[in-house]
Amino acid sequence: MANTMARAYDELNIAIENAGDNIKKIVGAHEKDFLSAFEQKMFTVQKDMAALKEKASAQRHRAKIDSRVILLEKERDWFRDEALKLDKMCKDHKMVLTKLKTTFENVQEDKEYLHE
Image 1 (tube, one colour):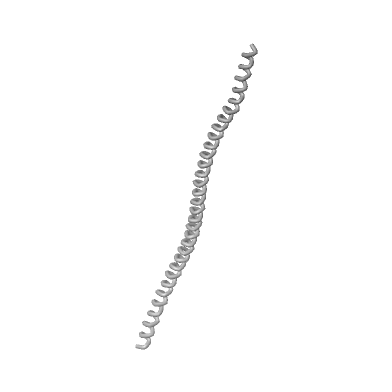
Image 2 (cartoon, rainbow, N blue to C red):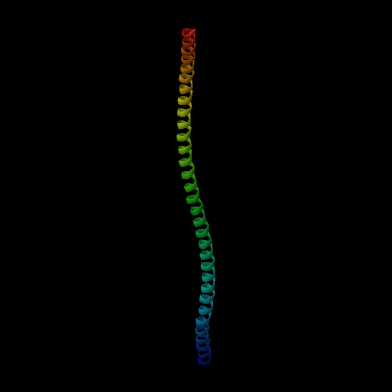
């Protein structure tokens, strides 16, 4: 019985020593898996951040272009309004000029008639 107790005691000590090694192997494997998963997640996060930065940059660029388009449209509308005003003034002046020519021709005819 002492012999079996000694053998059981030795087996227990060996199991305890092996348990420490087994725990180190398991923890090492879990650590390796964790680091691998962490690196993969960080890679995904970096890729997503780069995509979001690119999207934000594109949106800022688009907003800048849109504001420029709005400004140019306002300028176009102002120039169109000014052109319409000038066209109306030109037509008015042509009408006045036509009336003055007619009046001048009538005066010229009256002058010629009076000189005869």
